[in-house]
Image (cartoon, rainbow, N blue to C red; front, side):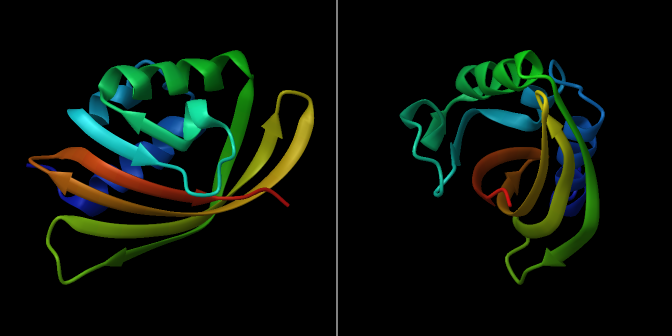
Length: 122
């Protein structure tokens, strides 16, 4: 079984590596992903692997090209929960972005069952 910290690393590596088709496989069929800072209802709450898959497909269409920097993993007293903080730097379409982020993942049986993704660009 994959540890939550390793699943976090696979997620970040998958975004950086543009593995859009593989990323949804990190999520449970009934996973819930919340983006608390999002004002877009299509992104604010994703329910289920198929919505996660559609989310990553949109990222592929937007020509996302990120690298992850300053990655820190915080393990918690809950064996299912890991907190990862990092900064994405790169381009989103034609725009240069710097996006600090914190992900709070709950991983069960090697799959993300819930995620709160706090990210903002500057």
